[in-house]
Length: 68
Image (cartoon, rainbow, N blue to C red; front, side, top):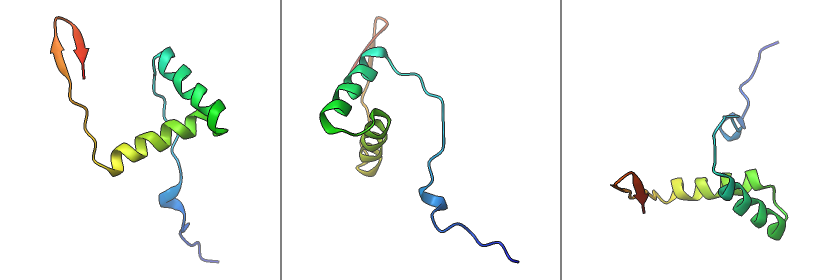
């Protein structure tokens, strides 16, 4: 029996550990309540949209603070 490649392999998600600020999690959890979607999915959709549109963050470093 020959193994065949999973046609959905490119769409599979990979688990990673990432640390977010509490207020960011609270924001997306609030959106989750409004939309009925899990907050992790909302974060994924938002980041996917940023990547698809080539959005880049502009940061200015001053006296230990960041602004965008």
